[in-house]
Image (cartoon, rainbow, N blue to C red; front, side, top):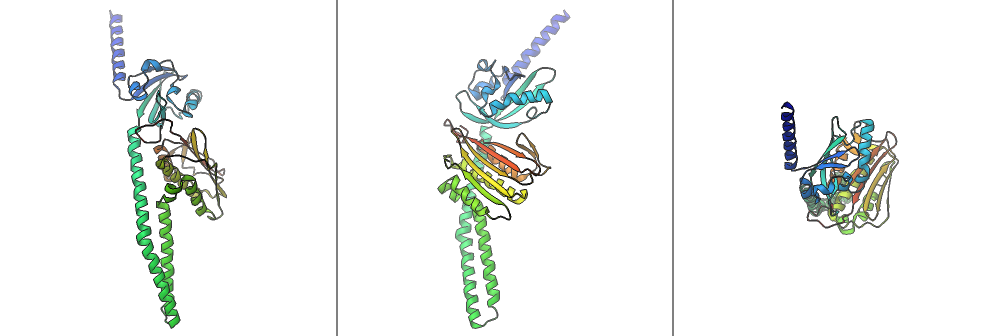
Length: 357
């Protein structure tokens, strides 16, 4: 009798657990140590277009594009061998692949089931959040360009005119032998310095070259402004085949490159900073490498991801995330820093307009 009651309770608990899993809004996947799908809830179909029975028995990498698919099994093997939680128990933001091949951003949390060779993955669709964040960034870019135009057309031109007027008066007073000619000349030079400072701010804010001439040309012009920064040589190498076709993506890649180069100029104490732009059939790769002192020991990097500290690098991570790009950071003391941003080209149209497809 007791055995029958226990069996009934177990069956009721199992039914309750299955009902809870099926009611979850997020996709919940149970896999073994090989990555084989053992169970998945019904939320899978609305997000990935797969029916649950289509995925059971398949490797979980079916839901991932490259390079994530190739890396997945290695993460599990490494965890089982070393117990080092590089992805286990850590929220990760990456791209997932629907049945039709389209890509979209997700948040993935993988946990190990204690006492069993099982792992539970919880997948949350981040498309709406990423879209809102990207729209906010695009609004910021519009505002930056507006401010840069106003600075150029209003304040910049006014200061230039005042500097010219002060210099003209100084020249006239010098001819007349008036003692005020030197202070006026000093004022003119100070105004000219302010004009140069405003132009630097305008160049920081605006993306006019990018919008009109594309990423390659805009970055080459930026690199030209970095030449001669102290003892550091900055150079750019490109295969000259860049065609992103998405201005929003180009803006973020441009900002990532500038931030990375500026960080290296300010902190790396490098003799050489090299920026590379390369394109393949599937990817666009932005690569920034220096031969400096490496990142601060207070920065924590795991599998190329910044875990804490470093506002400049956080900005880079955020911008890469906005366009669905994969960012990897490698650094060693006195061996420099290598930042790689890999953007997957759109393969399918999508109404999100995020560059993920």
